[in-house]
Length: 216
Image 1 (cartoon, rainbow, N blue to C red):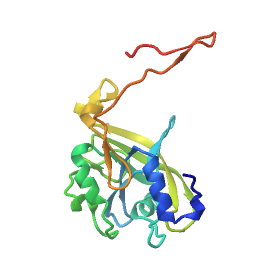
Image 2: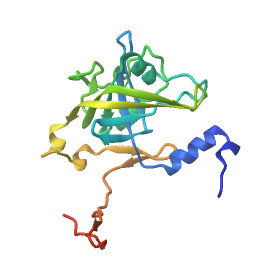
Image 3: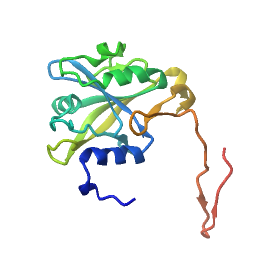
């Protein structure tokens, strides 16, 4: 199948993107509105940018119905701060509930029955039971696609504080079997991190020979 994205509807392009690019990690982003109202929403257009400075990116897409900006983007533009909470499997239902298209005056923490913990550096609170959370200060926003429905805004945030649950911490590493992060698939599908396999990274010798070392 050979598809020209310009020849099909935007919604069909979206399905082809999320159905092929997976699993996608979930950024459960907490922000604070200028009037002080907390906001919490999940985004699966999300990844790590670099380690120095530690930077994450999240892409809140414009609403497909009218091209309007989502509350998360409005709040980040206004305050320059946000927290990326990682979603553990036990938080899946609460995360899904926080995705409801409610008004900016609604506190999604309360809506989903979630306990909050104050952040250390930034104003938005974090999800207490999230296994990992990254406090971020805005670096820049790159708008792609203008104001059309489905356009996106690439939000780059510098990580200024990292929180890891004590039971998920092991000498500088995060224990995946404890954190049990989940990801997005296509449509209504979600993916667990409990089924994994390992591959040792290839080693290139000075003479160009490539070997695969045994796994540690």
